[in-house]
Length: 470
Image (cartoon, rainbow, N blue to C red; front, top):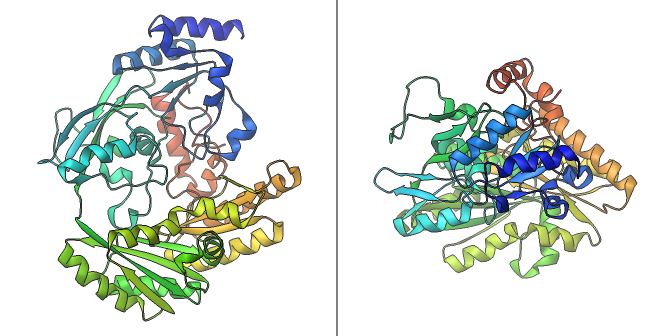
């Protein structure tokens, strides 16, 4: 270990208990990775990991880092897919593994105050006895933290009806780069809405720890619908899925989810679980409706009748066991992909495009062509209701030429999203992986983002290398 690293760890132990400062090389190694393919190849090991238990300890860490000019990277569970929780320039990783408290669940006012290290699934379990839930539902919900979700404006299948994380962060306690602490959304507020002043909460949500560090979150929660049903529909052509969704919107129906499986995904799932009997064709939609039992009983039939106009086959499930069986087709994509392409491993490199709904067919078809041109296996699926198209790229990581072709495919997929009027990330965040595309997507607005970053973090210590690009 370099003397500078030893000195840094020693200084951290002046403000934290010794066992909550990690500087042993072997123990530091896991913090060099998240779920991104980028991190597997970059191996940026931090100089030290600090594990605070209170806001005051976070303040002390940040003040020390500011004094030394040492980079700081906040980290939740490390489930991110963009290198956003990696110490890209050494320095300090702040792990929120010990900041998992729920301070309050206020059912009557539909909100809760929590610490950022609280795991999403644990939060849902705590809300359930109150008849409440937190609508954003990332695929990594069993492990990811609420602070990470807020930092990346995460979401999942239910975003089509319920929206993304930003819609549910009412306020936050935030440590700024100089160690000062602010509370956004009103110092004493328990209101569910406000038009008072500039909405600083929205500024920090999605900023990926580059403007400040969350130490508390005031989150809006919702009454949990007591019933749901799922419609499974097969389509001969991708264009028919878009027309079908448009039919629903025209009829005033907004489903809680509308999940797309491209034929590549359907074929993989058929190999994995043929008993599910997914219909043949170019695409399959899973459409979920929810509400009271009476509402769901009527809505699922009304919705299925609309969907049937375009679909080649439909069926629906109202029994919870059958609903979960059908949803296993979507949740089992990782296992299905591995079976469909033995010897290949999924990498997270270009998987999070979001495009206009009308452009989904063209995007998927062009993405298929790109995969075929480059000889890279890809499975396509997505949160169709809001245009989020996921591409599961599968390669042999030991094959250098295949890795090169996968990198080229990821680059071309990101550029394709911008070309069709979309975004390079619909829910996973920018991090390091997508920072190079920010200028192409945002134009001169990127300069305003950089000016805000420079104002709030003049020494550039907060998560350097993420988000803003060249």
